[in-house]
Image 1 (spheres, one colour):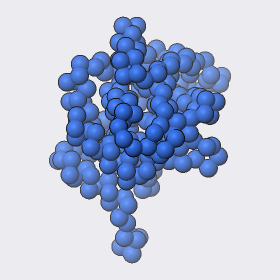
Image 2 (cartoon, helix red, strand yellow):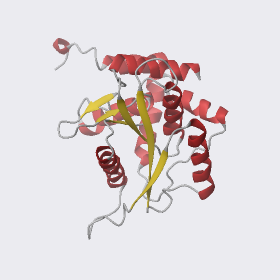
Image 3 (cartoon, one colour):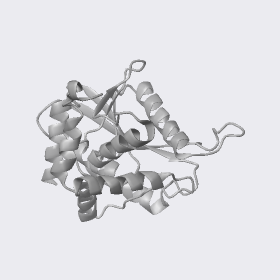
Image 4 (cartoon, helix red, strand yellow):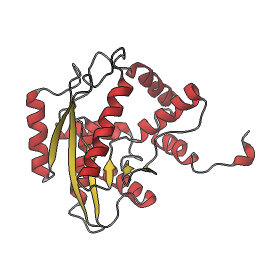
Amino acid sequence: MKGIEKAIAKAIYEYNLIEEGDRILIGASGGKDSTTLSWALARRLRWEGPRFTLQALRIRTDVPGGGMPKEAEQALERLYAEWGLPLETMDVPVIGRLKPGKEMNCYWCATQRRTELMHYALAHGYNKIALGHHLDDILTTLLMNMVNKGELSTMIPKLTYRKFPVTVIRPLALVPEESIRRFAASQGWLNVTCSCSYGAEGERKDFQRRLEVLTGGELDAKLRMFYSLSRVHREYLP
């Protein structure tokens, strides 16, 4: 627990993720990552430091297998109520929005959910959206983009849009997935993951395994990979 909170505090400080007066909307899926993020930010509301407001939004879609069992929804609602963190659920017809001739895929679903988060934030005066991507997500995306796209890019801790007055923040950027997994298990939280038939997680899981081989599963090695992205020596690159 302390390790997670320390890593979150470090990310918030290094990347100036939370500022005085921020109105933050958490993208809550019910999974271990966004639930851990929600717990941590709700605790920070009671700490000294920048004053901010917090709400969570869960996007419920019409994708078969992509939702939560009713009892899991109720458990999640009780958890957020216990933390004093408002949680709203929005129904989004992801499949219903498909144009004729288009096939359902993970990218479409993710784009629709992210769009709704953005629209909700804009409509309700939230200036930041907090997402539950962790250190392993960032490094896995880095490897995938290098191999598949031939580019050096990944998700970043703080993303400011040119066209929208909303900033995306990732407070778990320095937290390894294993720490989140152990913590969520110790709390007895239900870990809801997407099990829809359109899942394209096979490739990502393959790159996650590659990351573990590359780093030996060591946190220090993963952090060195992460910080190497901001310690670039262009004179030694093509």
